Image (cartoon, rainbow, N blue to C red; front, side):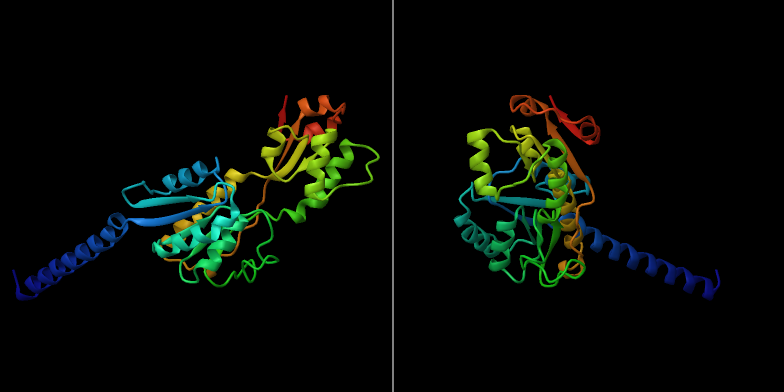
Length: 264
């Protein structure tokens, strides 16, 4: 073997060793670090399994490379600020705020820790973020834009209940519904499942899954300010025919044909 050949062999060997060492270090960072997520919610949510399930699909395993610390106010929203500060003090890597009130509490608790939220309303109008494409600060997530769907819901309920002339604000609306069994159109699919007439809303499970992808990107180094807030693209129309029968309504066939799900 010539001197030049030996030199090339030595260089190749050293380069291989260097690359292997670098790869080992990177792999160690990915597989050995236990990332921590602080999960904050105003109440217990059955959709949390969608969030955890998506993380699992993205390659995270509880206790191996990730841990999720759940904190719920159990319906007592006044407890959210205390819980949010507790999460911030525990130095988690990311906070997931499962609803608007939780997002506000998390925002007030920390300006350092990244926060991913999922909320029904408009995060810009409510002051959570600066804009949808450039949220700024340490927050980003998935928004439902509930108020913007009001016109579409009114359109649907007008097709179902002919001659409708008045609609109610939420509190008064719920009181009247309980007393008079009125036709209802809701922002949540759960309301139709629980006995409401119909709902036109995003799929909440999909929002939780999308939020999990934001957590994944942040854990891999992306800053929240660089992740545009995502708006939903799919909305489900759910009709409860049992409720329609109870209040004496016949749902027009053209409305039934557009339903994503009919409860019989």
